[in-house]
Image 1 (cartoon, rainbow, N blue to C red):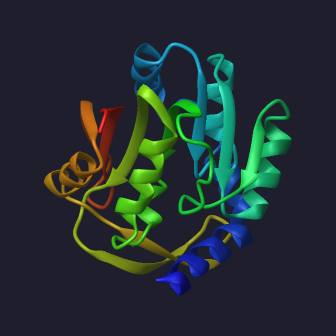
Image 2 (tube, rainbow, N blue to C red; image 1 turned 90 degrees about the horizontal axis):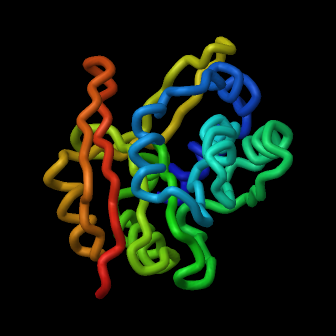
Image 3 (cartoon, one colour; image 1 turned 60 degrees about the vertical axis):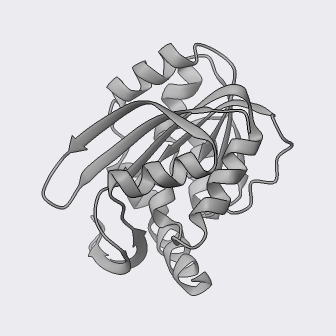
Length: 207
Protein backbone atom coordinates (compact mmCIF):
# COMPACT_ATOMS: atom_id res chain seq x y z
CA UNK A 1 0.00 0.00 0.00
CA UNK A 2 3.02 2.30 0.06
CA UNK A 3 2.38 3.18 -3.58
CA UNK A 4 -1.23 4.16 -2.79
CA UNK A 5 -0.08 6.42 0.02
CA UNK A 6 2.55 8.01 -2.23
CA UNK A 7 -0.07 8.63 -4.94
CA UNK A 8 -2.27 10.39 -2.37
CA UNK A 9 0.55 12.53 -0.97
CA UNK A 10 1.66 13.47 -4.49
CA UNK A 11 -1.91 14.49 -5.35
CA UNK A 12 -2.13 16.77 -2.33
CA UNK A 13 1.31 18.26 -2.98
CA UNK A 14 0.34 19.10 -6.56
CA UNK A 15 -3.01 20.62 -5.57
CA UNK A 16 -2.08 22.10 -2.17
CA UNK A 17 -2.71 25.79 -2.85
CA UNK A 18 -5.89 25.21 -4.84
CA UNK A 19 -7.20 22.67 -2.32
CA UNK A 20 -6.46 24.98 0.61
CA UNK A 21 -8.21 27.88 -1.12
CA UNK A 22 -11.30 25.81 -1.93
CA UNK A 23 -11.48 24.50 1.66
CA UNK A 24 -10.66 27.76 3.43
CA UNK A 25 -14.13 28.64 4.72
CA UNK A 26 -14.23 28.58 8.51
CA UNK A 27 -16.87 26.73 10.48
CA UNK A 28 -17.11 23.40 8.63
CA UNK A 29 -16.66 21.60 11.96
CA UNK A 30 -18.08 24.42 14.09
CA UNK A 31 -20.44 22.24 16.14
CA UNK A 32 -17.83 19.52 16.51
CA UNK A 33 -15.19 22.01 17.67
CA UNK A 34 -17.63 23.21 20.30
CA UNK A 35 -18.01 19.67 21.61
CA UNK A 36 -14.25 19.11 21.51
CA UNK A 37 -13.65 22.35 23.42
CA UNK A 38 -16.16 21.29 26.07
CA UNK A 39 -14.39 17.95 26.48
CA UNK A 40 -10.94 19.58 26.45
CA UNK A 41 -11.10 23.29 27.38
CA UNK A 42 -7.31 23.76 27.23
CA UNK A 43 -4.06 21.91 26.65
CA UNK A 44 -1.59 20.75 24.03
CA UNK A 45 -3.11 19.17 20.94
CA UNK A 46 -1.83 17.42 17.83
CA UNK A 47 -3.59 17.74 14.49
CA UNK A 48 -2.96 14.83 12.14
CA UNK A 49 -3.39 15.78 8.50
CA UNK A 50 -3.62 19.54 8.96
CA UNK A 51 -3.94 20.23 5.22
CA UNK A 52 -3.87 23.95 4.44
CA UNK A 53 -4.35 24.98 8.06
CA UNK A 54 -8.07 25.78 8.09
CA UNK A 55 -8.86 23.87 11.28
CA UNK A 56 -5.56 25.00 12.79
CA UNK A 57 -6.77 28.60 12.69
CA UNK A 58 -9.83 27.76 14.75
CA UNK A 59 -8.00 25.47 17.17
CA UNK A 60 -5.30 28.08 17.82
CA UNK A 61 -8.00 30.73 18.30
CA UNK A 62 -9.54 28.51 20.99
CA UNK A 63 -6.28 28.81 22.92
CA UNK A 64 -4.78 25.37 22.46
CA UNK A 65 -1.03 24.82 22.31
CA UNK A 66 -1.02 23.53 18.76
CA UNK A 67 1.16 21.16 16.72
CA UNK A 68 0.09 20.28 13.17
CA UNK A 69 1.36 17.49 10.93
CA UNK A 70 0.82 16.50 7.32
CA UNK A 71 2.82 14.28 4.95
CA UNK A 72 2.33 16.75 2.07
CA UNK A 73 5.16 19.28 2.33
CA UNK A 74 3.31 21.87 0.26
CA UNK A 75 0.37 21.72 2.67
CA UNK A 76 2.72 22.44 5.57
CA UNK A 77 4.05 25.50 3.75
CA UNK A 78 0.53 26.86 3.21
CA UNK A 79 -0.57 26.06 6.78
CA UNK A 80 2.50 27.73 8.31
CA UNK A 81 1.99 30.88 6.24
CA UNK A 82 -1.63 31.02 7.39
CA UNK A 83 -0.78 30.28 11.04
CA UNK A 84 2.65 31.72 11.91
CA UNK A 85 2.17 31.03 15.63
CA UNK A 86 1.57 27.32 15.10
CA UNK A 87 4.13 24.53 14.97
CA UNK A 88 3.94 22.47 11.77
CA UNK A 89 5.89 19.36 10.78
CA UNK A 90 6.03 17.21 7.65
CA UNK A 91 4.96 13.90 9.13
CA UNK A 92 2.46 11.20 8.19
CA UNK A 93 -0.02 9.54 10.54
CA UNK A 94 2.25 6.49 10.42
CA UNK A 95 5.23 8.51 11.71
CA UNK A 96 3.92 9.90 15.00
CA UNK A 97 7.19 9.51 16.86
CA UNK A 98 6.31 11.79 19.77
CA UNK A 99 7.02 10.84 23.39
CA UNK A 100 4.30 8.92 25.18
CA UNK A 101 1.68 11.02 26.95
CA UNK A 102 2.92 14.28 25.41
CA UNK A 103 -0.48 15.61 24.23
CA UNK A 104 -3.79 16.34 25.92
CA UNK A 105 -5.77 15.81 22.74
CA UNK A 106 -5.68 15.19 19.01
CA UNK A 107 -7.70 16.32 15.99
CA UNK A 108 -7.96 13.98 12.98
CA UNK A 109 -10.35 15.39 10.38
CA UNK A 110 -10.68 13.41 7.15
CA UNK A 111 -7.20 11.92 7.44
CA UNK A 112 -7.50 8.38 8.80
CA UNK A 113 -9.58 7.58 5.72
CA UNK A 114 -6.36 7.83 3.71
CA UNK A 115 -4.66 5.11 5.82
CA UNK A 116 -4.73 1.53 4.47
CA UNK A 117 -6.84 -0.73 6.66
CA UNK A 118 -3.93 -3.04 7.38
CA UNK A 119 -2.15 -0.08 9.03
CA UNK A 120 -5.00 1.69 10.83
CA UNK A 121 -4.67 -0.23 14.12
CA UNK A 122 -1.00 0.76 14.38
CA UNK A 123 -1.90 4.42 13.80
CA UNK A 124 -4.66 4.28 16.43
CA UNK A 125 -2.23 2.68 18.89
CA UNK A 126 0.22 5.55 18.28
CA UNK A 127 -2.52 8.11 18.93
CA UNK A 128 -3.46 6.32 22.14
CA UNK A 129 0.17 6.27 23.27
CA UNK A 130 0.83 9.97 22.72
CA UNK A 131 -2.23 11.03 24.73
CA UNK A 132 -2.05 11.74 28.43
CA UNK A 133 -4.40 9.73 30.68
CA UNK A 134 -7.94 10.93 30.06
CA UNK A 135 -6.88 12.68 26.85
CA UNK A 136 -9.49 13.15 24.13
CA UNK A 137 -9.52 13.01 20.36
CA UNK A 138 -11.69 13.90 17.38
CA UNK A 139 -11.88 11.54 14.40
CA UNK A 140 -13.90 12.10 11.21
CA UNK A 141 -14.01 9.32 8.60
CA UNK A 142 -16.43 8.41 5.81
CA UNK A 143 -19.02 5.66 5.89
CA UNK A 144 -18.76 3.00 3.23
CA UNK A 145 -17.16 -0.33 2.38
CA UNK A 146 -13.65 -1.38 1.45
CA UNK A 147 -10.72 0.67 0.21
CA UNK A 148 -9.85 1.95 -3.24
CA UNK A 149 -8.11 4.55 -5.39
CA UNK A 150 -10.49 7.23 -6.69
CA UNK A 151 -9.79 9.77 -9.44
CA UNK A 152 -11.47 13.16 -8.99
CA UNK A 153 -11.38 16.49 -10.79
CA UNK A 154 -10.19 19.31 -8.54
CA UNK A 155 -11.48 22.88 -8.68
CA UNK A 156 -8.33 23.74 -10.64
CA UNK A 157 -9.56 21.48 -13.44
CA UNK A 158 -6.89 18.82 -12.99
CA UNK A 159 -7.51 15.18 -12.17
CA UNK A 160 -5.97 13.67 -9.04
CA UNK A 161 -5.98 10.11 -7.78
CA UNK A 162 -6.22 9.46 -4.04
CA UNK A 163 -6.52 6.42 -1.79
CA UNK A 164 -9.62 6.05 0.39
CA UNK A 165 -10.61 3.61 3.14
CA UNK A 166 -14.28 3.48 4.13
CA UNK A 167 -15.84 2.04 7.29
CA UNK A 168 -19.10 1.07 8.90
CA UNK A 169 -19.74 2.39 12.40
CA UNK A 170 -19.51 -1.10 13.90
CA UNK A 171 -16.24 -1.79 12.09
CA UNK A 172 -14.55 1.37 13.31
CA UNK A 173 -15.89 1.11 16.87
CA UNK A 174 -14.34 -2.35 17.10
CA UNK A 175 -10.96 -0.94 16.02
CA UNK A 176 -11.21 1.85 18.62
CA UNK A 177 -12.05 -0.63 21.36
CA UNK A 178 -9.14 -2.88 20.45
CA UNK A 179 -6.67 -0.06 21.17
CA UNK A 180 -8.51 1.07 24.34
CA UNK A 181 -10.32 4.17 23.14
CA UNK A 182 -13.80 4.74 24.53
CA UNK A 183 -16.32 6.65 22.41
CA UNK A 184 -17.73 9.49 24.52
CA UNK A 185 -19.85 10.96 21.72
CA UNK A 186 -20.75 9.95 18.18
CA UNK A 187 -22.27 12.00 15.35
CA UNK A 188 -23.58 10.67 12.05
CA UNK A 189 -23.36 13.51 9.53
CA UNK A 190 -24.59 12.68 6.01
CA UNK A 191 -23.74 15.47 3.58
CA UNK A 192 -24.67 13.68 0.35
CA UNK A 193 -25.14 10.18 -0.99
CA UNK A 194 -21.39 9.97 -1.47
CA UNK A 195 -20.23 11.72 1.71
CA UNK A 196 -21.54 10.39 5.01
CA UNK A 197 -19.34 11.36 7.95
CA UNK A 198 -18.79 9.11 10.94
CA UNK A 199 -17.55 11.36 13.75
CA UNK A 200 -16.06 10.06 16.99
CA UNK A 201 -15.04 11.89 20.13
CA UNK A 202 -12.81 9.42 21.95
CA UNK A 203 -11.13 9.25 25.34
CA UNK A 204 -8.01 7.34 26.30
CA UNK A 205 -8.67 4.38 28.54
CA UNK A 206 -5.92 2.94 30.67
CA UNK A 207 -4.64 -0.38 29.36
